[in-house]
Length: 223
Length: 228
Image (cartoon, rainbow over all chains, first blue to last red; front, side, top):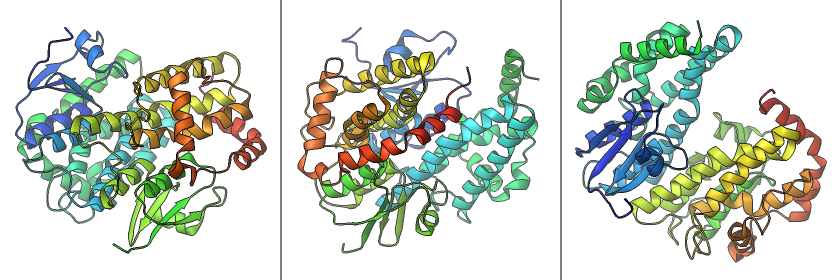
């Protein structure tokens, strides 16, 4: 087992994970063939535990037998290890810093707040609703009038945020937030990204995300 | 390049130190603007409206907040010895452990200092487990970065200089040389490094300041720790 080093790229992932989808989109943007390995998160495989012993989480990208963990680190790795194809990060250091800042902001804020939107009720849910609107408006401010976060080209921050657009419907139905109404530019950006092959192919259909969360809510006994 | 470089920082802050040490390792002169975090300046709020935190790097007309983003920016914008390895896989590994420090170590460390009883025991177990994982990354090297200081050393600097001080103020022992021989040895090597020494806040002053703030630290934790 120790000496076995599979060549090529494998992605350990879970179908609805926005973090996993970031990696799938990045791999497709770079036209990199890879083997997709769906993981059972209720019964984690030996491969997953061995590849990510610290966090035991997906996504994990395994490249020639060596694992890379954490979605944004994976996306940067893909960009740097396969630098001959089109870049996801800009070349200018300041533009790169800004991209990293916004990707970090998305990581710190969106998933946690989104989870509280569907997991809580009453006052905590109202608070989550308020926070999510603020987060979306902040991101819309960062986008400005540009077609993509990075400017004219689809890039790192777009990859970081676009999987969450599949969750807008869920935010709307459980959290009563209309992204279209609150952040029209962001909604337009989501539509624009949705026309890209890599995004079309890899985002979960919004109804499927909603069904998944509705099932989880029932399972946790949250009405 | 000749553009002015400034760091908006704070005397007590290990995150502020990260920005300073990165600049010094690259040989970049800068002006340090010290904040009173109890009374944040308009300058700080203007340059970091989103998080309102230190450090913030000002380079010409560019503004960069978030300490780890700053370190990577400094590595890429200035000449001098590299702070990250060249190989993409090694870079990914360095970024992983830098993030691990911020995501998995900061909070349980803080909570292990100021909580009590079983709750404290739980956090102590957690932080010690995570420090063990981190220590494993040294693998006989002088620094996490190898022979020279790199991103992970800079990210872990809080555990080199601030950890022993907080242990003393809180009356808690987290990392003894017996339990963490490599990490403690690294801590000494890091804090005695010629360049690092220049931007480490004075130990006695920090100790006095933290001792005076102890009650305040304990109260911050009451709102963070899970309700039992």
